[in-house]
Image (cartoon, rainbow, N blue to C red; front, side, top):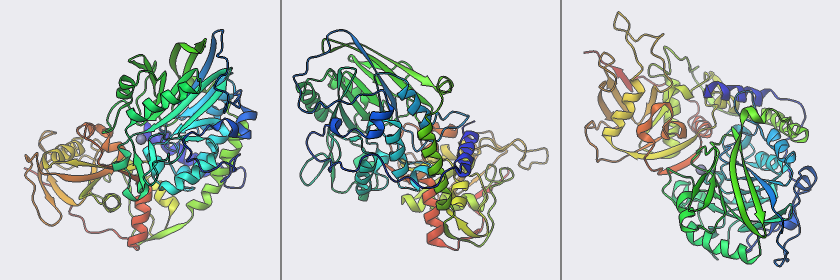
Length: 562
Ligand SMILES: [Zn+2]
């Protein structure tokens, strides 16, 4: 089960203590600010990359007339996407960046790419504001990554710093500084392996302009991906590359911006799209207008592998497969990266001991009776934190996300991360009262009454049970599932018409629930209004801001019996 796996991951994170130091360094520091129209990273490959991988990053900057490979040559593109900080491997589904590094190094003529949303998520990512993950990716031999919307979660200035720490290309060809219309980060990169020249450019979903906190992208322009892609393909072909690869954080579904499939239709001159953002597992890729689109389900659960054959300067075959968790276990992790991970994990411990505030009460995370069956003070605190951090009118927190008690007295960052260990982020979507009823119906659908008409603590608990903020509601567990919610009243006393499907309400919740986790499928198709930082960061901020916090009065969730 997903939750157990992540708990294990957290425990590993907290207990790995081998070597000192919290790595904020990477192999390369002398790179200039990447604002030039064309940034060819060929000259600036990190020592790490050149030494440890079977990847030859040649000096190709001024040799567009290079003779194309005549005989058929096969190269391998390995790729990840949406790691959201899942760099530390475990026994239950996360491969680990040290093993990914080894898989890359053991594959001749391969390059390693990421399609974005790597630098933010779990505490191992957020506590160093992305630096540790950026350094680990450099050590693992990544050549380039697309810039995902969550890469902006520390603000654009920090993202530019992370680019320098990483030392490899952060491709965001369509993200420009509004001031001079120049690329904000890297525009294109040309990498030569096995005599094959690969031209790369990157796309960040233009919806990031609206979904990211406004301050974090202020002063940046997000240009049309199709227009950008057409220009970059022409430019790269002009440089004589053999293969054109778009690394995109666009997704194949669920985004308001240009999807990767649409990009392929509009710009079929692209050979391969390495995609991310929608967490869509494509075991054999997806071919659209002759363009091969590849993506993994993310969270470091599999490594994408594309075999590309090039003959006389043209791609003659391209095949996508996935190296899944089980297959990956056959390869031993790269020792140097494992040691770096251990050192970072130790540094994490001291960061987690930081006191963020105080609680007047111990708040229980008991499951049943508890956060999975009834209103609980800790659940309300979490939902309040989501609401405040997001600015949404109302918020929900599923009981399954709440995993540890909040202690009385001093509350540390570690306590907060234990309460919310999943590295979820917050999302805001627009719903209606009718949809809110549907959402709440799912939340209480698992509740079962015993012979005496009380909630059966054995049979009722489900992760989908919701803790709420900004409103109260009443439900009747004696009625059939789907027909239980009796009334919903917004804070301030406005009673909602449960059939009203036009009035708009902004709802905040974790990305897990908001994208359909725990059977909240009614939320899946809705457009994302805003994406925010980590759920645990929101709770830490809330405890810090309202310290001392305490268990308030109950009254948000009422059981009525007919
Ligand atoms: Zn994303």
